[in-house]
Length: 410
Length: 223
Ligand SMILES: Cc1cc2nc3c(=O)[nH]c(=O)nc-3n(C[C@H](O)[C@H](O)[C@H](O)COP(=O)(O)OP(=O)(O)OC[C@H]3O[C@@H](n4cnc5c(N)ncnc54)[C@H](O)[C@@H]3O)c2cc1C
Ligand code: SF4
Ligand code: FES
Image: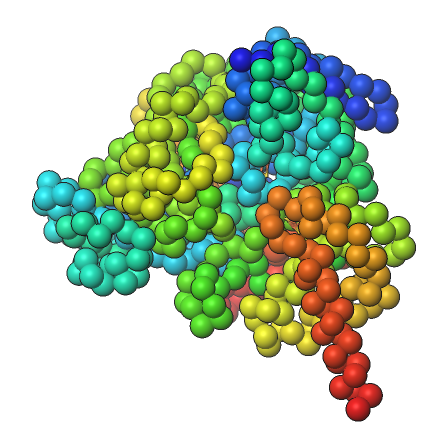
């Protein structure tokens, strides 16, 4: 079914940082009829976004720790499976207990999943091995969950293609170098283009979606943002030993996730604290550690050849902040309205994970629209973006009328 | 550790970056290190995202051959025990330049059929498990292909054949796309595409499958 789109509302928003969060926000705001400029210093998704495991979290991993985060992952992953199905390997996942201690938490784990609306169900080990013959045959208990893997690049690139089709200005290889402020309000954003030209882009509001660089971007506007980078290593093993997303039935820890993708199995991750914003590389010890841990889940991985090893930094929010909607942050991301620090029209969005990129965008867009006095509702939960392949075609070839909704009425 | 000198040659001139690296690090790691160091502003622009050969953005011509910067290790380019490793990087052919090594996606990627599925059955057409297609749309085959006549190029044709194979219902539509004068029959069988493809897609073989299928179709029509 074709979708009806909002008319332009005559408001301009600059988004600073073109990772998954900034891109999803560009799409969400463009759908609300807002003129968007997305500024990214490198290629789009060249920060943390392109480098994660690509696990589309159903939330099971977080169910015992935080039911609200788990439920949000369940909602958003189900939605993305309908909005951008071509970028997702929707094969499900297994949580495996490899010893009696891990197994002792199984009932509690399943109950926590159910509390978060995640349809987890226990399988006999024999049935689990039928689904995933590569799994460790000595597993003690097994639970199926609706986890999936996704293309870390092509999922956000689909939203980017949508934003482009709606007329958003997309500036890659363009660095934010300043924020123009007058009478305590954001008036524009100063950028440096790849060819050395500077430009001031006028806007009514600006959103800092800088990931681990959010503090640096905030400093350009004179605001303090408590974000620190926590780099982690990842390893890709050649071949498709496992087909399903595999996790350990122990509380979340290092090296306990295996995400199959394309012709690879991706293992992650470690986590350390660091100062500065990179570059981060995996150490030899981290690579060995990750391989050993993965071989416990899938023994065949012990000998399969290494394809690549790399690192990515998690943008951890430093302190608990109040969300823009006034609730205390039990979510794992935060929308900061810097109006309270005397800078109106400047927002930052920090934390989160790639799975909830659309929810992050929706919340940030709600806050920005409320500030600008625009009441166009969120449409990104309903309207499917075009294929990322639309980015390869000339803009004229795009027809906005072709956008479809995810079932139901417009 | 090995001394590395990377020379980035673009039509406007060349830039040299130097440093000492672990030979197991990749060409992309070298650029990343330079981009964050004291020479940050002198480091040329380059594309990257996944760092593991999955997104397809980081292609370049490395010492004369198309390859992904994130999967090419220093050790792959220089002999063991050598004192210094010299690496020449050029942007891929045929794509329009943004700045230095960074280019827009290759224009012939526009021939990739947008309606074709990107998901493939893991085992065979009856399996319910899916994986993303092998082709990462990096355009290296398009850069290496020497055919100058109007030709949609190996990437799109390979995608059409893969779709035909995994989704037989789409077969006729894919063959129609490949049947034009700039389609499968414009291939001159240089096989440069299959030699550079980092994903083992073997586009040259897929193009020949299309040529044969088109021939069979024609024969059927003549009969
Ligand atoms: C090891 C690891 C594994 C993970 N695995 C998963 C997973 O399996 N599933 C999942 O859902 N999530 C996962 N995550 C989390 C997820 O990757 C991140 O939450 C998400 O990618 C963050 O996206 P972002 O857009 O907020 O940040 P980023 O992608 O970092 O985007 C910020 C952008 O801002 C740009 N920028 C910075 N400064 C400037 C400037 N001055 N001007 C212009 N642009 C600028 C940067 O170049 C960058 O592209 C993982 C994270 C890590 C570290
Ligand atoms: S066929 Fe191979 S070389 Fe060509 S675009 Fe696809 S992955 Fe790249
Ligand atoms: S960075 Fe993704 S293919 Fe090299």
